[in-house]
Image 1 (spheres, rainbow, N blue to C red):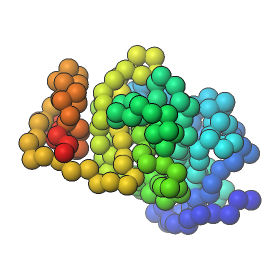
Image 2: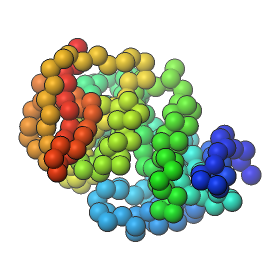
Image 3: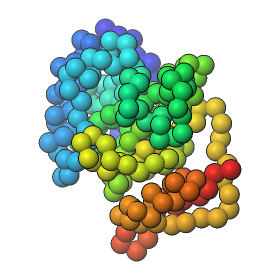
Image 4: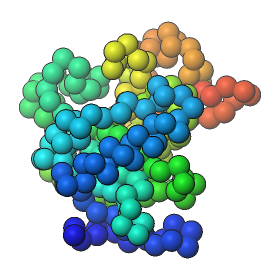
Length: 230
């Protein structure tokens, strides 16, 4: 059995976190199916195939899993992406292959419905980010669908900012989030608050050098707060 890298308690139930290998593939697929079927809006999750899980498990990234009584109840993944035309590094202005190779993706994160409400997603985020070799990578990137409130809060809480809003995964609208592993971003004072539903206005601001730095509920709509970077 793989030794745990973290131990904690969820309510009154002890759990542990392990780095996963390919022997956990069937458990990952099963948990992903449970989480996917429980979603009211299936577009909020882009499930991974067996091949995509194996690609990460066999060396192109890292997957950690949380276990209660030896049952996988949650997992989180980071991916070393291939350099292709859809690479998220382009969304933050990188153009050289040497720079693109220093971008890591924060990939899928699943928590069993029975174990939600304990902050497990955030716990796993902190643990997996501690595993990243910052001498090898400069940025972590991720995509999130507008109005996927839980995932958006997850990214902002980790210090990510929105660098782009574009169509990906077969014409699905996604924010591209970025975390700079070495430099704390600095912003000008001017702020703009735009509804998540106003795609054009957000894309215009992003093209002008603004980035999305936070979110809030304004009336009955969720909005993004944008600021210009120095």
